[in-house]
Length: 364
Image 1 (cartoon, rainbow, N blue to C red):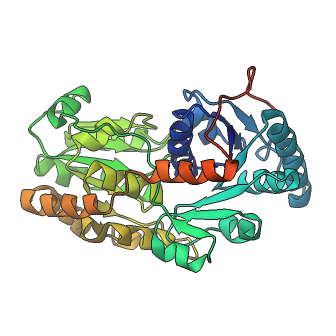
Image 2 (image 1 turned 90 degrees about the horizontal axis):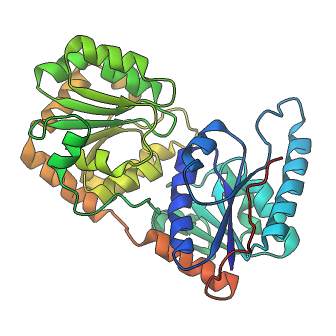
């Protein structure tokens, strides 16, 4: 049996989908990703073993929205039929609508995966077409009706039982020094990048070292700031294997994306969460609530020297870090990906079987 995953556009959509894809493939099933055609999708999926088909939604800005959707849905129809998809999982993002509409035209069961605490636009619009909706928590499921069920947020494997000292050394950091992981998401967060760079001297004076995920093309400013402040740091535009970074860190400074916070919980780390403030539903604020006392909320407008002082204070408080880590760990749902796959298998009608031979990436 074959799973078609429709959606992407950001790492926040793709990484939960990848966790499900690997869990599905581990049972012998075939996988195909339908994507919008954005560069971040290529970056995230480049080294993954799964074929993908771009719906050509990017780089077509002159076409009217209706024409773009019609063309993308036609491509999705062809891809789903050629792949002999047994079930479709909508991940959210631009590519989810064409994939879901195509599935319904072909009579293929549709599952929507809503990882955020407030249902996103794709979920709200595609909900009538869904056979089932799987959510990150019970409160979200309750807002979506009887076809919704809470399973948690699927996360990519982070590597259990890692040695913190060894992982710090792998980044060129000192094994005994308090370590902050700055993670702005797959595309980075400019406000967090500026915050860390502006107050690098406070980190230096407190003897804190940093792993910083700045986003593609955004490494120069934090690198210069850390170098001038004499902070021991490693800065990356994008880090594919995130497990060692979580292991090396004592505390995470991050946005409030559902996937990021699910990884924080799975890694058993506390987080200083700076939600993106411009979403109309403020879902990142609500996502942070899932960690309970494992997360300290900082609003973006308060990213000043006092806020960095609070980050430093938390890092220098081992007992406080332990309490945050324990609270965060209680929020983890490590079986989320397997729960999603179990539902997909039921709707697909049987245990997955291998993909057809010759499945290849399709380009528009």
